[in-house]
Length: 83
Image 1 (tube, one colour):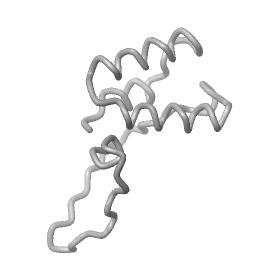
Image 2 (cartoon, rainbow, N blue to C red):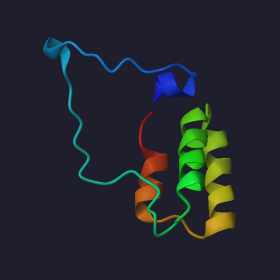
Image 3 (cartoon, rainbow, N blue to C red):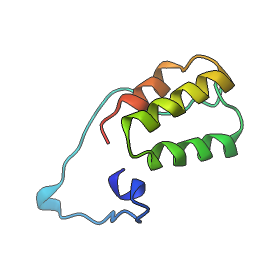
């Protein structure tokens, strides 16, 4: 996420000796039943990834609630996930 927020292409190569896996057991997403328009969802994912401050993320949450209604749990979890 950090590389994406800085406008860089993330390096997906990894050294097997330093591999880490995080299992959250919860989806972190904008469900299609909340926002059916794929383009709008992708645009919001990009804006979330580009947010550089907690205040910017909060503004996006408020905007989404205003435009689409209360955030579903997977979307609230997306905003709460560490970057």
